[in-house]
Length: 179
Image 1 (cartoon, helix red, strand yellow):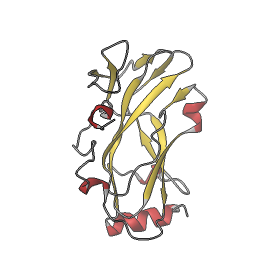
Image 2 (cartoon, helix red, strand yellow; image 1 turned 90 degrees about the vertical axis):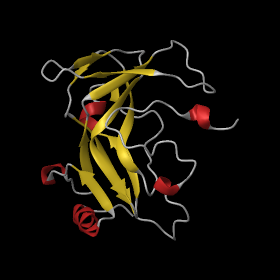
Image 3 (cartoon, rainbow, N blue to C red; image 1 turned 180 degrees about the horizontal axis):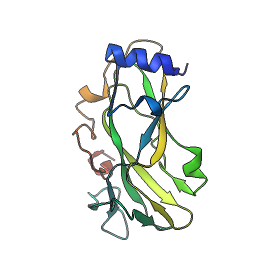
Image 4 (cartoon, rainbow, N blue to C red; image 1 turned 120 degrees about the vertical axis):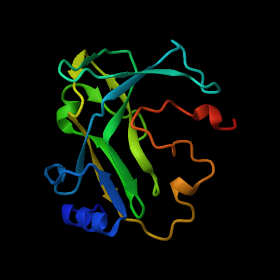
């Protein structure tokens, strides 16, 4: 079951959902709009290796002129909002207005885990050049209720790779897996 606007606000009052900063005008009927943060990053190597630590270069989106994203480049972005989810499963979906500009905000990682506490890293790709701006709406968080108890929350898992709080994009940590 998806939480409604009233349920999202009730869960925020209980502390089971945290959105910082919170703007009531961004609360939809059953979602919350999130915005592009001030940082983007690109990988340094032309070929990525799943068994190696692939480094990134992070840069700020110019405040007034924005930044033109190019096809064929994977950009890592970040939400301006810091979120915590302690009793629901958060899903991040792109806004239709963003999709109609040819922007995908996540390659495969739309579902969060119960206990995720951080800014969301976005895997951004575009089908044609498009100028983006910091704080533009890019996605919406949807919260699903749980059935059953959670054994281990994400923020308490020893193997969790994305727990360090940061307002900058975080590169893939696949290299930390054993395979």
